[in-house]
Every structure is written in structure tokens, then in C-alpha cells.
Length: 377
Image (cartoon, rainbow, N blue to C red):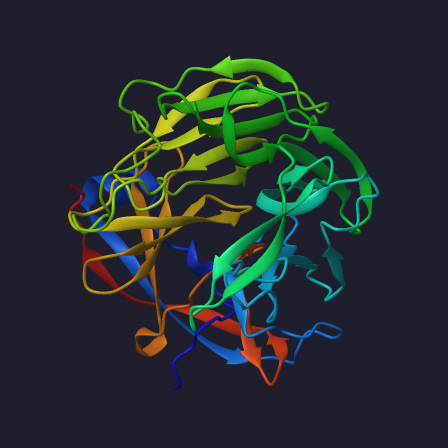
């Protein structure tokens, strides 16, 4: 079977996987974890959507099963000194195949040089965290070309600010708010009530910051992360392998789980931080075996699923959201691992693949293969 780069796992077998299995807590005590193998087939391309050469990973999803894919079109500015890719385009695809786009150049406010920092999709709205200038102050700058001659380009010198763009689920822009919370936001989320959650760092000392935010972009209240539950500085000194440049920003993402938002600190030893609408923070430590790292959490309407690396091969673990115990392990047929799984809805895994310039779903089923001894670290 060919190597799948971006695949859809619509695992209808999940609806019956729980039948006859022991409870999550019994599995955690016995360390006997059922292992499943998923095989899949390609389906018809999504109508009306052309797939670009690249996507931004991971894919995302809302609890109603709508997938959100950030497309990276070709083009942009390719000549020095201003190498710049074209704007990213967020596309949603419902379970029925209906698609909507969310262009961040749609807002009518006079903003210039808009750049997306993050976005978050809920069951009722989509919010973008962007950086932009509220005026255009072009100045000329010179640079030296590769042949030694001088060139000139125009640069907007106006001060840049952070803004929130609010869209409805049909891709229509509803409102814009300037973000003013006293720290540099990197990630944004929105609760069902409309209150937002922002995660980022203090520009003075790079310490991590987490806060509840009003819809008008002002600070509602700061939240205190438990000691040792997040890095003291958002700027790491080396990568996960112990090598690499200093100054990179620690990877993280917001994932909706029920009515809460969970902060996932990817590829790190820090716990998952579940934040309730009331601002309470609960730390969850997944009981992963030694050498296994959680890459991302997959949105699901049932339990908690994580895509991990390490061990024998990349896998998908089902994790008890209360104890952190691993209850089931999933592997793809012939070791084929998808680059990103958007979500698990109604017992189905969802993601996408390229296919002749189209987005192509693949449908997979999971079958019990064996039970394996499992030793959490």
C-alpha cells in the first residue's frame, strides 16, 4: 500500500471497539492495552475545493465534526529582500461536504499588512488572532542585490498591533477588536459563552502568560499556571533532540474538549492544562511509556486521543481524560501514519490527502489486532 501523506481515518469500527473491553481503570491497573490496526480506502474528492501543494499542520476540527484546513497557496513575494509567502487561507469542510473559506483580508476595517498569528474554531464561531498596522506609512529602503548593484523597496513603518477577527461559521466577518491585554499573545481560544482565552508571554522576561479575555479584546483576568506545569520562559534554549538554535518559541496549541479549552504543550514533558469557562485550571499528565512523546491532541466527541511518536512506531493513543491512563492504542495498516488527523467524531477519524489537485477523504476501519503489555513511565 502506498505511503499516505495526509489521510482520513473514518474509523467506523470505533463504535464497536468498546464492546467486551475492560474499563479504562482496569486496563490501566493490568497494563494490558488493546491494540488496533486501521486500514482505509480513498473516497471521492471534496467538491468545489482545490488542494494547494501544501497544508499547515496539524489539521483541526470542531466537536460537530467539521474539519478546518489551513491552505498554503503558491506565489507571494519571492525576490529579496522581502521573501514572503502568500496569505494563508482557512477552509472548513463539514461532514456533509459543505465548504466555507475564511479570508482574513475580508474585514472592512482599514488595516494594512495583516498577518495571521493564530486562529480557533468553535461550534459557533471562528476567531483569528492577527497582527496588522492601522495606517500606512511607506518608506523607501535600499538593499544590495546578488550582482552587487543597489535595489529599492517600500516598507510600511507604521506601528503594528494585535487584533481579533470574528467570523461566523459560514465564513462571514462579524466584528474586529483590538487586543489589549498587556502581553504578547501567541494562541487564542473562545469558550461557548464567547469569553476568550489567550496564551503567550511577557515581552520583558518571556515568562508564560495565560488570561481570560473579553470579546472587546480587553483583559478579563489573568490566570495562574501551577509551578512546573509550563516553561518559565516561552523561549527555549534548544530543541527536543538537545541540539539546535536558542530563542525558538516553545510549541503549543489550544484544543476544545467539551466546554473547556485544553492547552497542549507539544513535544514536551509538561502536562495538558484544561481550562474551564470559569477559569479553573486542571493539569493532566498522560501516562505514556518511556521514550514516547505526545505530538498533538486530536479533537474528539468521546474521550481523549493523542498522536504520539517514539517506541516501536508512531501511534494514536486513547487516553482516559481523568486519570491519564492509556486505554487503547491504534496503528495504521503497514505502518502508514497520517501527517495529521483532524478529529474523531461519532466514532470516525477524519483527515485529508492530496489527489490530482483535490482534497480526498479516506475511510478506514479499526480491528482488534492484539493486547500488549504497557508500562507507563
